[in-house]
Length: 287
Image (cartoon, rainbow, N blue to C red):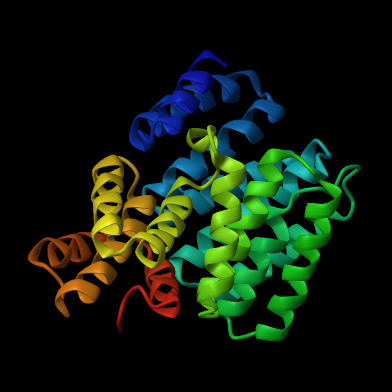
């Protein structure tokens, strides 16, 4: 648990490689003790770190192991959350069909849980359905997320719902709705921004709103701050901000800067084909 706690601190400060290394030590100990609860916890966290690092195949392998252990101990809510993590991993990888499959598994598993209140599960499925060309079903899943949000009134759930819906609005090019939801998310997050889930998405939404509210120069300052925060530490969030920065280049200069070209080439080395497709759908990148 000490190794796991240290790894969580590393993850919180975007040091994903260090977090993954610490989790390997924790998993080794839990394996020697044959502790299924610890292993479900450890492999889930390890998968999350590997996913953020762009090592999607290793992330999925860890998630599958975590799902095996959580199923063995009968923890339906954890199993649903892990299946939803697999949904996001496949979404980011660009395997949208598999993302939908795991998203649907997450939703069906959550129904068996004593407290099925994870807003992220239907939100992740909604995005996967949309990217898989199933727009009508995506909207149904988005409505399910809204219902879940009404039942779970925690700060964390509210943030996940607002950000998830703003992200979906960007995918559908509904800019006014995206701006309205982002403003609401920033208002709810006020004073607690560092604890916001999905930091890369939150910063993407902030940069998008900054452009429309404060202008391109203010948005560019924010984007550069975020690039520095994630560079070499959190590839998934870095890829999000690189797309935003490239978008701002097009707004300012009508072409990508040399730095953006280099960063986009670097992003191509990670396993984020699905994330790139989402950035194209949102209008941040051209094909």
